[in-house]
Length: 104
Image (tube, rainbow, N blue to C red; front, top):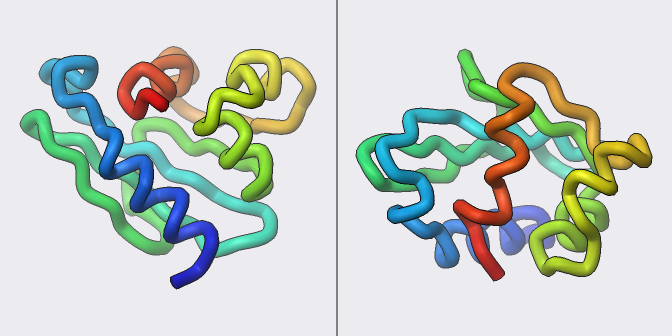
């Protein structure tokens, strides 16, 4: 299993349906140094897909280490965004909820 896939599978395991309350969203992750993945949230469930989604709600671009650091809590997502380590396109406010929906 690729390192990137392992990160997304761990996010799936940490998915908090209560935090995603009634959310309908697709988080697209374009990784600079790994395959692209997306997480689709519908009806309190989260599914993972490989590649590009047709219509993502928000697209986040970064390298794999940045994603790992943000999801592990070592790096604040907003700080990473301000430093230019994360680029976001689409519903930026949704991106700010990522660590609430997938808590450590």
